[in-house]
Amino acid sequence: MTRMILRLLAAAGVVLLGLTISMGQAGAQALDRILKEKKIRITAEVTSPPFGMLDKDNQPTGSEIETARQLAKDLGVELELVQVTGPQRIPALLSERADLAISSLSITTERAKTVWFASPHGALSIVIGGTKNVNIRSAADLAGKKIGMTRATLEEQVVPKVAPAGTNIVLFDEHAATQQALLSGQVDAIAGAAFLINELAKRNPDKAIETKFTVMTAFYAIAVKPGNLDLLQWVNTWVFVNKHNGVLGKIYEEQTGVKLVDLPTL
Amino acid sequence: MTYTFQFGIVLDKLDLLLEGAWLTIRLAFTAMVIGLLVAVICAYLRTAGSPPVRALIGTYVEGIRNTPFLVQLYIIFFSLPSIGIRFDANDAALVAMAVNFGAYATEIVRAGVQSVPVGQIEVGFALGLKRLQIYRLIVLFPALKAVFPALASQFILLLLGSSVVSAISANELTAIANTLQSTTFRAFEVYIVVTIMYLGIAVAFRGLFALTYWYVFVRGRMG
Image (cartoon, rainbow over all chains, first blue to last red; front, side):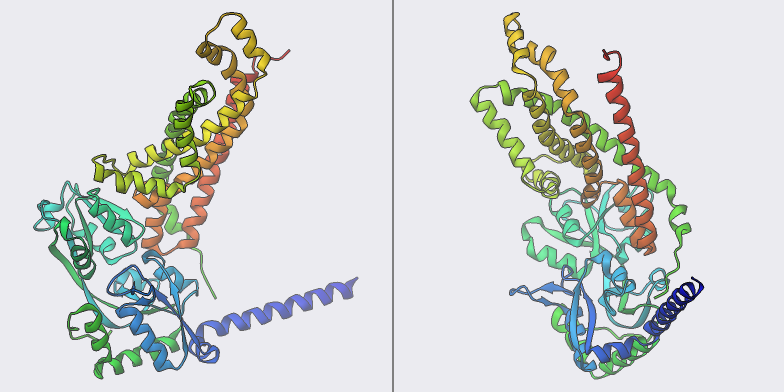
């Protein structure tokens, strides 16, 4: 009887020891694991042109996805794109469904509480967009209006802070719904990245959508799960090298049509 | 992989979550009341109405029961404005839920109506009652008693399915949870708390239905 119990305890102890060893290794060895498996998993948000979208053959493309492809190539591993919606970008990273988040994640101190950012590799601006007949010229005009935006975005964090009391913030789970709300007149205006709003205006010329005013500009960067210091270090090095040889600038300009501004180092 | 649970962050915002839960309850309950009214009328029309009326009701019922709720919701919120009918988010949610529940409840009530023994209906005719009177006085009560459990289950499905209306920005419990998750990134804690809240609401309603059944159908009718 005692021998049985002792055996069971020993077995349990071995299992626990094995678990702690493997768990302890997981965080610090992310880069080694990626190199060993010869595969890196990167988030892909395909509903956010020009950062991520589907081309005419329904293949993922866009500035962030092309950046991911370049990074995987330089690392010498196979790329696996993990499709996510806006609100899922960070959770996918934290639950280890993806090793890196390259989906136009703007650097904010709020997000920095849960992820580690690399040095920025791109910039965007958040604007308010609406149809011609809606009179909005500055933040003060937002009062009493319904402003739509997508959850888990930079605009969700920033616009409620600059909007005056009496603004009705309406939240949707994805960009498609936010844009549809504007097109069907269910909201007076929407907040979003300038590129997205311009794209929306171009595709719907009959609605006469225009940019009302710019809320803020921001830099976005690659994010890693806290603890993956070796991966972060490699990514920072990669961004540094490709900033100076112009590769990042080329990808950005090709997809957005805008020249990349000078990027600061984090 | 270490993960420290931080329920405090979620429980701080409990008042927001309770507001969302209250809207969920109000939406589901109102949709049920409207849907039940629709169902009682449509069940009558489908069993006792003329062929064109039956076809019309049949189209409504089969159309709703064979398409996804989310698609119906999107049509009501995003597509109707282009023909001039504009609902705001919470109203659109209520309309979609009532229409949806009405279709399913129609079929359930109709099954109950058809389960009433034909003899009882014949007695009604023999007494000189008109169709509508027979439906109201003889058929409806036993029909509803027979299908009450099925209706209660359909209501719970409605209640839980209401989480879908967060997609059109109605501010019910799931929408609040999604916003909380997107600002705190505490997916585990947020959704565990919300699951427990839905469970609590559903169990409370089941108890309410059991009481209602006893009060309406059983009390004073034993023996």
